[in-house]
Length: 301
Image (cartoon, rainbow, N blue to C red):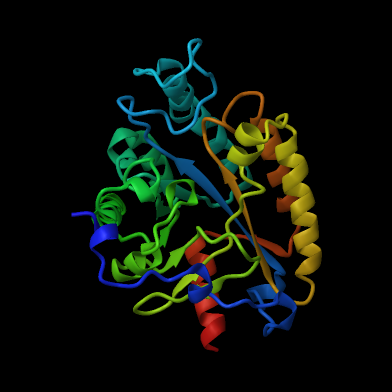
């Protein structure tokens, strides 16, 4: 049964879940050991179903429409998991920084070497829908969220604490269902540079700052910038948020997809951004759950 149509709960509007808050009027947040900001890097690993319309395209068919199989666009994406991911991995190893793997539940079985590489490096696994499609199109959202949690727990030995909707999509109920199914944080609400609380119909859930601007999908596929835009924008954003964090800690996200930033002509710009940020001694590279635990401790103290 489709939970969206059968729910007895009145939907919460975004303004019901979170009230306006000016960042300059909040209590001061302090990171440990004198750090002034935390950076987390999210690698999105997805499985695209060749029997369905491709979620994104690099080539349009000569005669238009959405033909299937769409081999060029499926193969474009698959290159990222076969080759691009392994290029990206070397950057994380070189600079000794952790990543968060936002992964479709179905991709756990489809890309076992990627899963093993992330496990070997103690990366955090974050739920990213069971399949790569809008949450509004999922037939049973609760089952999708629950199944994603189960397959991640099975392979990692612990349930995921965080969730990122495919394309940041949510239904009216998503935060409620996430909290009820055991998730502790979500990253879909890109509206702040600090973690914030979202109301649900039970207990609140934390939203950790994600990014639409320093996201390779937005830059390369939607805005059609040249590859160097990734480094330019990431560094510019970092410099400004670093300045903002003089009086109270901030969080910055960097987002990449193996089929985009793992392309041979783009990787060096991701590496350059990491190199610049890593040079700052008072910046920590954390996972989502590390940011969550710090925020929970700070909020309760």
